[in-house]
Structure formats: C-alpha cells, structure tokens
Image (tube, rainbow, N blue to C red; front, side, top):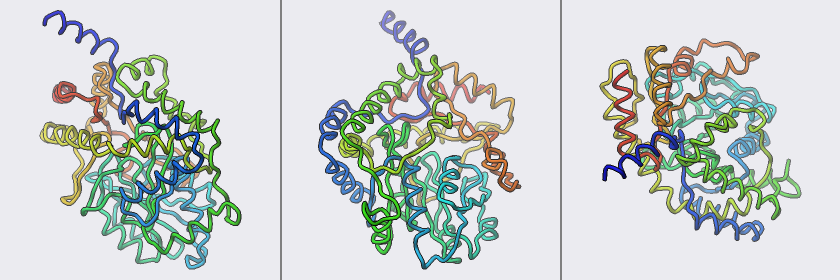
Length: 415
C-alpha cells in the first residue's frame, strides 16, 4: 500500500495536470463516428433530430461551429422585412470576443452593455437605456454553465420589438424554470468546441424556438436559392474532423494536458488564426459521434453540477472570495466554477499556486470587449472591468476527483 500510494503521488504531481474544462468522448463513440463519416448528410440529420428532442426546440440545425451558428442567425434576422432596417446587436461588455467579430462579419453594429457583479446578468437599468428602434437583437449569455435569469431581459427586448438570442455555448444542459437554457429566446445557439459541455472538437447547433422562424431560416440557408449556402463536408474533410476529435480526446485528459502545457498548446485557442469559421454544416463524422455522445451528456453534467455545488458550499465563507448567485429556479452545470478574488495580488499568487499544483485554474476573457476592440465606444462598464481583472475559474469535469476538490479548497483557504 505504501509503494502504491507513493507511485500515485509521483503520477499526480509529475505527469498530471487537470485541464480547465473537459468532456471525455467514449472510444466506442469515436469508432462509430469513423463509420458515420462515410454516410453523407444522413448522420447530421439524425443528430439534428435527437438534438431537437433533447432541447424541445421547434428546429435544430447542426453547423461547423458556434460562430457559424450565430452568423446564420444574424443573416436570418437581417433578411426579415418585418424588422425593418435595424442594425444594432446588444451583447455583454464581458464575454467571448468572437461574438462581437461575428456580429461585425454580418455587417451589423455591436453595442456593449455592462453586467452585474453578483450574477453576470445584463445590468437591466443600462439595458433599458440602450434598447431602441434600431435594436435588431439582444444576445443573452449563460456563462460557465450558469443559467441566468431571462424573464426581465426578454421583457426589455420585446418592448422595442427586437429578438432575444440565447448564447448557451458554455451551458448546454443547464436548466432554468424547468427549461434548458437556449430555448427561451427566439433563437438560441450552442457550441461543440473543445472544452464545451458536449465536445466534438468543433461544431455548433442553431436552436429555432419560435416555429414561425423555421421557414425564414430554411429560405436563407437553402442550397440553391438562399442568401448563402451551407456546405456539407466531403469524406476527406469529415475524416480530418474525426482526427481532430481523436487528438483532442487525448489532449483533454490529465496526462495529455500536462504534455500540452509543456508544449504551449493550451494557448492555441487564444490565437486569432484559430478563431475563424466556415459556413458549413457539421461534418458526418462529428454528427455520428455527437449522436452517441449526447446519451451521456447528462452524466457528465451531473458530475460537473455536484463538483460545483461542493465548491460553492466550501468556498462560500472564505474571506476575500466572492461567488456568483444562482436563480432559485436554475440548475447550473458548472462547466467551470467561477469566483472573484477581491485582492489582485492575492489573485495572482493564488493562480500560480493552483497552476503549480496541476489544478486546472484559468483566467477567462481578461479584458472587457472595449479594451479588445479599441474602436468601440469606451465604457463605463465597471462590473465588466472588475470581473475581467478579478475572475478565476477551477475545473469541475469528470477527471476531477474528490481529493482534487479538497486540494483546491485548501489552497484557496490558505490564501
């Protein structure tokens, strides 16, 4: 027992690094995806059927990425004559910067709105000041697997005839008011990218929640007569996407991530060269994997939820640590567990300690969007700035064991 314990300690400290997020893919699902890659568009259509049942949406469409999903939604809204010549899209001042890039790619104008320190929801007072007759859409983000209140945001959006879009990229499977996030807005979208709740190495889904938008959506994306056509990947491209899933399956494991961090591969996602997107449908191989993997998404999310709940309890009374509140009707999946460290020097010391212990600590979106895009009107966005500077996240995924959580809590309490 002593020898075994010593050997485990060596593995845990020398060649084990928890990734910030992970969604393990079963080998059998990977093998099924290889076969599906030879079946044309059929696997995608079957995957869309089970996604529609999972979400309870009127329509689900699987595409090349979450960015592709948002771009298609923007084009559908732009094409609708009843919305007039609206050009503005409101989004949080603190969120993934590629959302803003996609809005601009669609020829629309992004408008930033501050959020709140307690919830990361829109600041409702500020949102009411921003919506007007030029508002085409409001993008409501559910960050880090946390379902955010939507009723007030929906009311404000509807008051000017704009469309509410839910960003569920980090929260697929989270629930609020007994409905999955992404299904309350006119449209929703989710991502299957690396580290997302259901990870297929890339991909996304468009959720059409109002049946009246099914026909406009299909008209815009029609292969022959639409504004633009979405391409179906051929067998070679599908095989390449399958290979990406297989590689990421290895990388997003504790030993694989340990190696990836030594090679600097964990920074690839921040490189603008890897933030582009294509107007393609989801590949057949990824669709086949996703069809099978969707069956165990709830199991993965249950593990994340339990780990996040334990962290929430353990850290609730730690001085200098600020946690985000949760709606009473919400069930989070905690893709990552986010918290704020009030003292910036303490935050840096804590980050270094958690990192050196191999505990998957992360800094996410370290600048608000007006700092990343200096041509945008400057704030003030006080809450967005504070969160960008003070946020840390720790992992909750199925590779996280009880003793990992205990170690995270011990390290945070020491600081």
